View (spheres, rainbow, N blue to C red):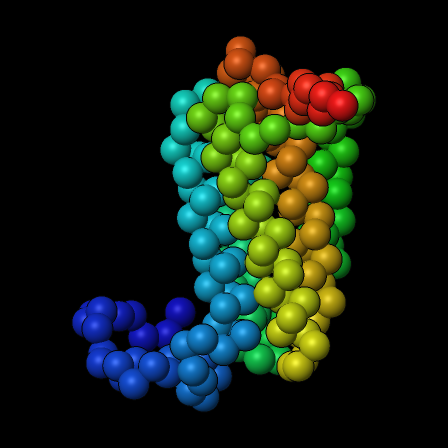
Length: 188
């Protein structure tokens, strides 16, 4: 790793710009900064899942690896032209996803976010992941972005959904099913 930060503030961003990993400066509200900023937010929400009680060692190991991958992805988005997330990372997510999903019962209803703190935090991470994916897609419309970034986030949101189910069941709270028939029929 290059220079370590000994002083956290630099004042260089006071004008509304920030430095990318390649040394160029862009507006803090640029699509690129938005995309890697949301990937960072996603990583933080996964940290909330890991800080919750009742997370098994298997889920903890999986999400810790995901955090490392997301840090790599943020770096890739921060340094135009950099390649840090690869097809093998996406294939690994798919294998883990299948392993966690196979023992779960098939879905017959939509699931509401809930099912205990860890599951709820995982649902939050899933929604932030979907936003990060949308922001990467928006960025890719105007700048070069490797397709692996979008594919990784797409697969990760699926994994986070499955892990939400796993965590809800493990907590004893169970999954919260959407009750579509709860609405009363309008009176004529």
